[in-house]
Every structure is written in structure tokens, then in C-alpha cells.
Image 1 (cartoon, rainbow, N blue to C red):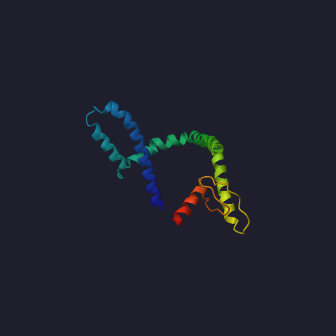
Image 2: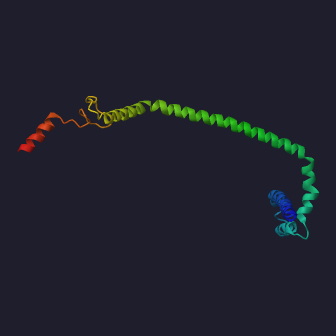
Image 3: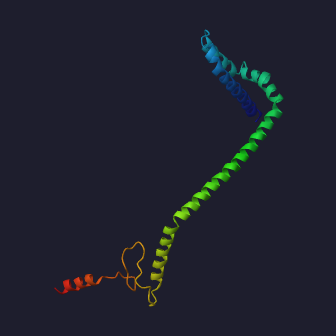
Length: 174
């Protein structure tokens, strides 16, 4: 297990040094790209960092990065605590705003759709009442169900107009 931890620490040191190198490289490329063998030197530096024989990344980390991080540990911890507090406050603030927007949208949708909703519920309740009344009791008189467009008779049967029934009987006798 110690071997795995040692390997992990080695790679952690390498990636921290490589990240610092990449950051510095962004600026040095602008000014030093004209320097002879600049790119070859960069490749050699990365090979030196990676080499298990030179242990370049470990050397640079232990000599420069670790002492700097150790001396600034309290400041880094304070910054992390402040960032945590600010992120929690931001989360609460935006969460409240999001809930307010959602509640406002729900109220607006309910108020705009209240008429249509009540008509829809009324049509369902009238249909439910007509299907329940199968016990011989008189059903509500000819109240059209919204959305059907047709008038119904006593037992939910479509009413025929007088001219339609006369034409049906006259066509049957002729």
C-alpha cells in the first residue's frame, strides 16, 4: 500500500509542477520563442520532470512548492472557508429566487387557465353524473356537455331535431 501512496504522491508532485510549467509557458512563449532550441529545451525539461532517475518534479516540488504552500496554509484555509460560505449563501439566494419564479409562474398559469380548467372539470362532472344515473331516476334535462356540440336527451342519447326525425320516417316509408 505504501508503494501505491508513494506513486500517487510522485504523480501529484509531477502534475502540480507541470501545471505551473504550463502556466509559465503561456507567457514565456511570447518572449522566448525566438530563442534557439527553445522548443527542444521545453521537451528536455518535461522529460527531466518525468524521469524517475532525475526526479525533477519531486525536486522542484520539495524545494519550492511545498515550502510556499506550507507557509501560506492558514491563508489558503481561510480562503476556502470564505469560498464555502459564499457559495452556500449564493445557493440559498438563487434557490429562493428560483422558487419565487416557479411560484409566480404557477399562480399565473392557474389564474389564466382557471376558466378553462373549471369548464373542463364541469364537463367531466356532468358526464360522470349521467353515467351514474342508471337506476331509473331522471337525468338532468337537455344540458349540452361542453365540447360535444350536440344536445342530448333524457338518457344521454343524442336528440334528433323534428325535421331530421320526419325525414328519417318519410325515407323509411317511401
